Image 1 (cartoon, rainbow, N blue to C red):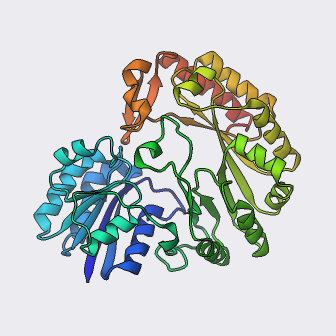
Image 2 (image 1 turned 90 degrees about the vertical axis):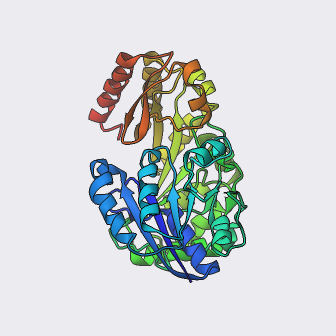
Image 3 (image 1 turned 30 degrees about the horizontal axis):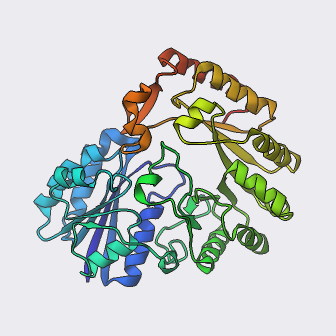
Length: 408
């Protein structure tokens, strides 16, 4: 029987369970396919960074009084600066443990660097980790670097089997699909072979949704990068049949959604029957900025989708990104004006963060990118097309929309 500990670095939020979907899925999978005594989880709260190396690490040290067989550590851009000290503590307290690392930082482009930097890590898992982790625990794999395809249909539930506990106040996340076919240069998906879209077992998904509906959670955020790929109508129909009450959000792409509106006469009627929020990522309308991040848009389709959602009173949000290289203060104002003219009801602006080993990261010098580090994340505040003053002016333009309750 094996004792397993997961150590992760997460941004805790009110009403959201601290255990991530990634950890819960791994835990559920190894419980099903491995001989497990118990699984522990220590989640460092990145929103309490001042206590990470003190109170939070002291809590971890208490857990490490137990002798574990496997300790799994998440490597993300915001957590790598803590890993050396955590590895020191693990080696001081554990005798025969195997340390396994996974996460977006573990990818084919930088694996050799990670192996040299973290000599105390025994195994690195690239990509989705369920099958690889089970193989290590079952001693079916001994390689330093492991990359094994995961069959989604083999992954058990995480809510109905209580891996993640929820209540009526909970805001939860759920996967129905994995992967994204697009290649945005600021996204980590490209380095982890996540561009192939795969679906989860539909019966499992329905069981999870039914359970969450029975509990009466506050909101379900569906994490699929593109929800409207495969079986989406069947899923919406099921939610209607079970009279699904929580708010449920889906991430969708304007152009793809526009095509589905033409193909399916039932899409909007189904959405109208649910307490739904559609989340669209527009990011920018600047041709230069779009080219820099390998995105394209058809603004006629974008405007048409917004108009049809407004007409049917279906709730949605349109996200934009502040700080894209190629954006200027003039083009950013044009973006905001376009959304106002289109009568977009809800705009969400996000500052651009640059993730290591992405294509955008590799073009820092070429694009004149300057960043500031906050809480482990690098925020772009200047590029070849805008300076810091321009960036602040973009924020002022956003504030004007916040005052009008257009920008959230």
